[in-house]
Image (cartoon, rainbow, N blue to C red; front, side, top):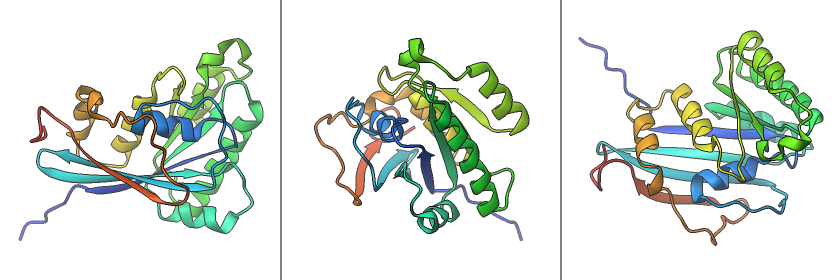
Length: 216
């Protein structure tokens, strides 16, 4: 009798971080290729995207969380039910980096697994003149001490945004075919720049990744 190990066909990603660091902006850039410069306070939004990869459907749920830490029980439940985490800070806000450190400790305590998939994201590189957080220091801490992944991004300039999601999906053990598909077919992402997902509602769309409608 052979044991068949099935690849995941569903994954839940969570974006955590202080208010105003750009969590919603990163998600909007990935999902809709849009950027809204005005900060909009987020309560909690769940987005779902379904990929068609080689004829197999893979659903990615992305949870956009509030920067407020007033609901620890809700945050704990969110952590328990999620597969991979993006911890976002702003390169011009040292306090937001401290929040990332606390959030990482909380995730590891809740998940009870030091190998939980985590990507630390330093956002707002477009504000390089305002930088107060050294990328070298963060890189050393995250990759050497924490054994996690680190990327700097700009949601405004669309720099490294796709790479954040690709890293999260790879760590979450999605089918290996997804990564080259994401690289090759970024233009298939939804381009509706005017439509924003409603608060506290599930936002779904179906796209096909690969060479034509049949997938990769």
